[in-house]
Image (tube, rainbow, N blue to C red; front, side, top):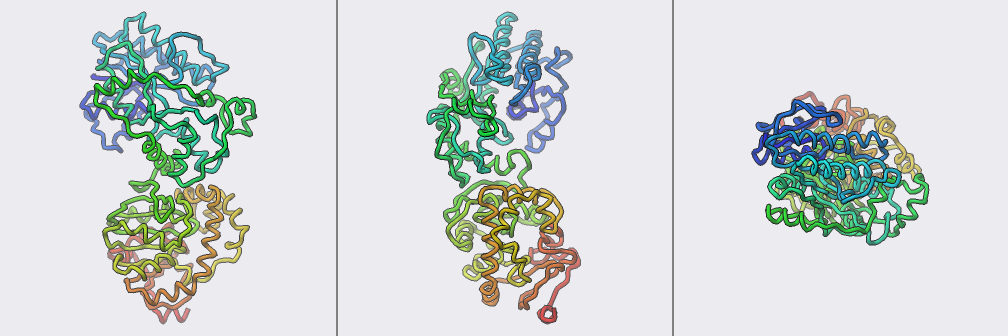
Length: 573
């Protein structure tokens, strides 16, 4: 084999395998369980050069294919580990990989992935002071370098800083999550704390070129231009539309305060340092290979998009591309086709754009699905929703079908009246201004507190729905600071705009289709086509997605029985 990668199912290892395969190499991936192949397949990686082998590096290695280059990316990366648990992979495993590599007659290079805080010429690992993870990485680094000299193994060590990218939810990601969820009251450390980053794409390209560089080197791989921690947090906060803390807490004080007050894991505090690192050798390798790091701030913003889309590892995004954009002064979460959508889908309350996933997967065209301002993942705006919608649509070059559910029906209708030439059709689902008013208690200030504390199951039961990923997503957003209050405020606006919206319905010049659940019917007569979905309530996009996607209003022939209601029938109701 050209290469064998240990730890091939890990965050770094799997991306390295993909990089090596993309370079046309034959690669043996050493794994305990093959979760690698589905991951590679989902990303369109050609598997022709891949051989998956079973290996447990915590035991002596035998019966593995020979390889020219050996990569050890395996590590037990977690805080709160026991000493023996951490040493099993980070020390004993690293030694076992080296001992096996020493037996290979055609070995060109052993590349060992260490850490930017642990490479040192001498010393003893301080397990009580550093914690099991960092101390075991320190011990493993020393052991590998010493044994490589004794066995005559050509070794190169890569010392990456915080590696960021899709799928990385540890380390700095925890700080971003606290910021996103409003649980970061102060910045840990002082103004000069340096937590450098490197992107996963750059790092695996760097690793792939290391066997071509001289042996015996160890390279600190990180972006020297990473903003200091307070500026890093501000960059991410501004991008996500959340407030960055202004105060900071010195590391010394964090060490003395109880963890229940600070929320900080003691093992993470050693990473809050002002130290800088010697990156000249890594820069020399990169220059020879023609590698260029992406800008640190742009990389942080892109990673923040991934973290929010993946709910920090809790779910997978249903629509790509995705990310935060500025729309009418609001940091807006947008998924899908930004410029040429066939459908623009606007969600209702208390949901977000994820509520359209069951319908969107059945539609024949491309979809644009934003979170409305102040709702879901989008930041609040001081402008009317229809102004926000006009700015959102300003980039759209098609004439899409505009689909709005519940509270979004009013702004969608106002936009259609003002911009009939921009739409091919307007579809209103469960328009509240044509239905019976909801309970007054839902618009009470007390309702916000109840919403914020609701579990997924409780929220689903309150809405008359079954628990599912779309409800999980909505419940997660409602727990963010101010989100539940904005939902209740939006409900009050919907209630006060009922008469205005009814009046606009008579003025719209775009073809209009109205859909409602049979259990949540219209009570106001209208001159537009109305369809009732049998068995559905206020949220037919979640309970009857196939019926909605097959409705003629979405541009497809109807594939299910749905009941058309005439104006006379509605008057009789």
